[in-house]
Image (tube, rainbow, N blue to C red; front, side, top):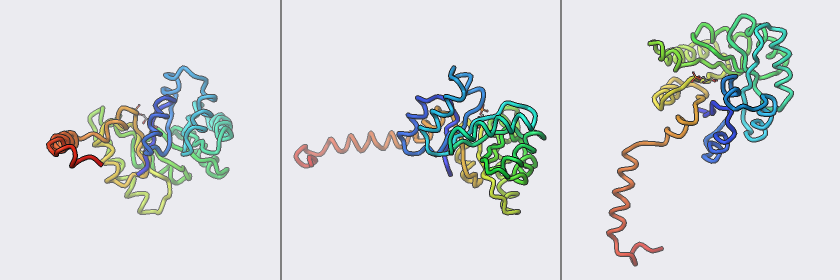
Length: 219
Ligand code: E4P
C-alpha cells in the first residue's frame, strides 16, 4: 500500500521524505489556507520536491470552470493529479479529464455507490473519507471493503485512496481491505513506527549489552 501525506506544509513533506516511505501528496483547500502561501506556487514547489503524485483540488462548482481549473493545474507539472469533488458536475468533469489523459482524484466520497460512479468515468483515484464517517458514529472503513469488492467484481482500475485517516488502526484496516493508497496527516505518519514493546525490548538489549566486558563488545 502506498503512503501519501495529507498536507501542504513543505517542512512536513521534507521530513516525511527522509523516511523513504513517502509515495505522494494530497492537498485540499483547507491545507492551502493553513499554509498562507500562493496556491499555484505551492503546488509547483511540492511537485518539484516529490516525484510521486500530488493532488491539487479544483474549487469551482460547475463542470466548465472545473475543467478550466483542472487543465491549468495539470499543466503545472507532470505529477499533478486534479482533485475533483464527488458531485454531478464533478463526475462530468472527470469523464472529460479521463478522455484527455488528465489524472484525477475524486474526493469527498462517502459511499461505495459514489465510488462506483467515479470508477465508471475513469477516475485515477477515489478518496473515501473514513475518519469523518467515524466522527458521526458510523463505520467509515466498511466503505473501503465494499469498494474493493465492487472494483474487483468489474475489473475497475481506479485506485482506492483511503483518506481522512486518524489512527494506526485506520492504516492497518485500509491495508487489510486492499486499499491501494492511504493518505494521512504528519502526526499519524510519525506514529506508525511506534510500539511500546519495541522500546521496552530495546532498553533490555541495551542493559544486557552493557553487562558484556567492554573489550568483548568493541568492534
Ligand atoms: C484527503 O484527500 C483529504 O484532504 C483528507 O484526508 C481529509 O481529512 P480530514 O477529514 O482529517 O480533514
